[in-house]
Amino acid sequence: MVPDVSGLDKTFDYLVPVSLVDVVSVGDKVRINLHGRRVGGWIIAIGEYGSVGFDVVPREKLVEIVKYSGQGVISHLVPLAIDVAHHYCGPLRAVLQSASSQRVTRTRAKARHGTIAVPDDEVASLAHNDDASIHVVTIHPLDSVLSLVAALAQRGPVLVVCPTVRMAVLGAASLRRRGCTVALMPDDWDHGLDGVDIAIGARSAVWAPLAGLASIVVVDEHDDSLKEERVPTWHVREVAFRRARIESVACYLCSPALSVTALALETQENAIHREVHSTHGWPAIEIADLNEVPVAGSLASSEMLQLVRRSGESVLCILNTKGKARLLACAKCRTLARCSQCQAVMSAANSEHLHCDLCGTTVDAVCGHCGRTSFRVLRAGIGRLREEITKASGREVVEVDANTEMIELSLHDGIYVGTEALLHRVSGAHHVVMLDFDAEILAPRATAARDALALVIRAARVVGRNGSILLQTRYKDHDLIDALSRVHGDAAALREWQEKDIALRRVLSLPPFTSMARLRLDDDVRIEDVCDGSQVTWANESQNSYIVRSRDAVELREVLSRARQEFGQRIRIDIDPVRY
Image 1 (cartoon, rainbow, N blue to C red):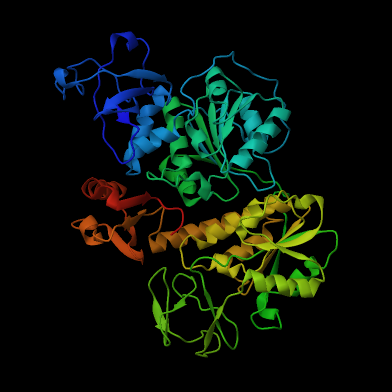
Image 2 (cartoon, helix red, strand yellow):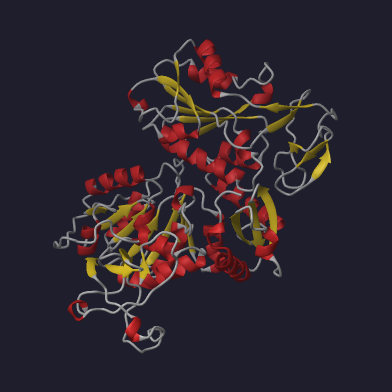
């Protein structure tokens, strides 16, 4: 038994009363007495008293289960939940919560299957009869992954996992129009048990039941939202292909820009890589050079001003002002201060030196282009920007914040400014302007460029095929910007950039060529006590936060498992962090 009690990461043995012998099974939820109070819990193993694993506690000390509550976790996924909790160094209770039905009682119904209409397009042709294979699939932002899902559903039930609830709801509606019977998780958990063509949902849907499961599809596997925020911080991608192995079904990991972990599966797991070669998978992407703006420090390029002056068209202006990223530029020639070793932006260590937070390089504070020693911080606020755009365009500019409701931009024109959260609060727009794209691609973290690419992917889906994206930058020669400027007509450009990124990661010993974790320690825990006597290296990220790395994944997890046993809740472990 695993009690559903916060902070208690232990298992306990209980007797199954005669009345429940033929009722309970592994994964079910029951009520038990624990230290004088009645709590819920999950059954993770059932066996005869005295057999191996059930002979630890004397029989006279065992008490009976009080009550059967109903179904919790699918029986055959309980070992997977145990494995995931161990792999990510966290409590099993949290995994079982994610993998459980919201309702412990269920209603039964007959299986429902529809007549599925599959479009004749290149995405649908990616569906193959390769049983128990892992497929990493590049599908461009404007090509619908639902065509692949519908094609797979013709061959058997499909489990689909999306990054957000909204994407799952819209996907379910679209699939129903194609003739599929759909269970939207977690609300339709019972329908999945009975049998439908497709079960779809957000992150926790990867644990959902589906009778006759034939394949699993993960949409936008690069998205940060697919990683659990609570400890253990499991990722949908990892759970999906492990579940596919257990159930001997195919697993499709789909994304316009596959993560480094998914790309590594090609060699580690013999995954099959497939790619859509359509020429209309990306909207038009234009590049504006901020070095040509006549007013120093201004983000109002001529290309941006032309867009905001168009009446009858909606424009989203994105500017992220949160976080650590601060760009230093030469006060004379405006050249950005960048590291010669890893190309990340550098910060001012003091008045005489620049420091790279990514690789640790420190150099004299001298501009590599003109030799000047004077630098200034490039930073603009949304409020100031709104005033500037209002004066330049003569149109009303709306600032969007966390309190702004969902905006139907596709129904009318307007200019809106905000952080990247704005892209998640609109249903569509004609144009998206990344006002200071350098703050994204040159942030002092190894994942900066991939995080910026994910932002462009989201913007591409907002503007659609007839819209456009404008990226404003002071560094047009950056490899990612060059690839994005060509991707509209040459989808292979992005694949070339990914190969360069992988090569740089190999040199810097970054994932997937090393295993990594982020640790947050209480004040009384020292990082030396955690990693002492091992080959695991660490770097101080911020106060009480550390990034630890090792080329030996097994050794890293052994070190972290020992630390968790010793320090308990005084240490928080994030295996495979999405940003570092």
